[in-house]
Image (cartoon, rainbow over all chains, first blue to last red):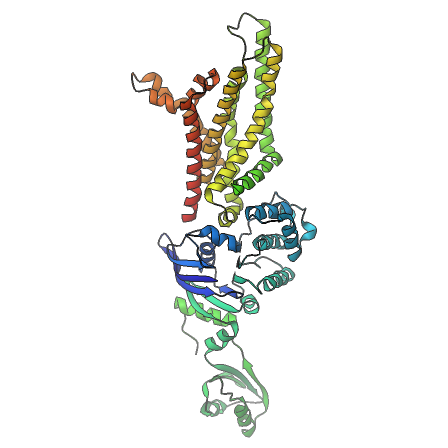
Length: 312
Length: 247
């Protein structure tokens, strides 16, 4: 649905995005993850026809975003980060205006249906200027959904919302994302983890990694981690664990607890447990540690900038 | 075409809900009314002071000048407001071509001006009732055509300034200064230069109006001049929107 190849955008000397390559399939929710200034918004603006790329190409539904910009725009629903709204119009008038620009037949009833989708039907006659941030966000979302687009591009759709509103907006996105292609940018990692089928991590204009949330966790950690806590001093235990086949590294955290890495697929935990018992120690705790996406993310983006080496 | 109309409709509606537009309309009509009354009083008190019968020029001459001062206030927000509110991104990613956007904006303002012009018809109507055998109808037609053409030019220049600068204050003063130059200064060399001055009086904004339309002459040259200036303003405005994309 979305095809991006070698997309580059330079502002003066600075490369906002640098040779991006990715694609999004139909019915897929693709998460676009990265720190502020990574190039997420720039990429989205190119895809929606707001600005042309410096080089490279992108197509949406087979249409080139530069040469067939109007065709692309007809098929894309876009919610910019700033949520552009005419604050002096009523919710209904605003959406009706956008529906007319999209030449929708039965514009009025479409507007009402869309308002129902985002739960704003009772505010249809209110002025946008009087709405709360969360409601404005939903008006923006309604605007993007008006024409039931094949592709939905949402730039930080949950930013600035309270937790209840975030859940609401996520539910709407999940709902509409079933049959549509959604490209969603965020810097909230759990959000990407919850919503997206695939995650694309971007930093300094380059894609650092691209995978499903689950794979990302497994792949990036490179090994499985476990935490062990014993009753009293664990002297000498670390050496013994290190000798077990499949264990990659052991790290004494405190006098009575240590962490170890092992090969994925070779669960060494039963053996470790036996070892502890045989050593006449009390086994208090033995649990797997999941590297959270936050840690992966920080690790990746840090590596990229060369600020720190990968932690062993 | 349809998009132009959609945008123009919204813009026109916007004028009828904005205080600025009402103030501008009120001031124009008020000043025009005062001038009209003063003229009529002068006419009444000294019937021999007038060398010819009063005609529509009593209305359209000040009207043209008032439009020059007022249109920058009407056009300054057209694009600049969208830039300020961030809705420019919405317009530029909606399936609307840049020229449709600019023409729609211009048309909205133009329709508002037309409504205003329609209200001023009350003065020639009164004048027509007051004098016998009535005013020169043809002169009125050409005079009003001239005012409308001038307004079209003023508005398209205003739209382009709003699109170029993206800031209301700058757009207002930019348009005003540019119009003043085109109205008074460009034609000046025509009176100074010994020869070749015709070109300056041709590109001067008011000469076609005062020398032709306001005198009952609908000249092809004047028509072409005003229409091409309007077109030029719209093209420059469209280009300014396109340039925004490359920033």
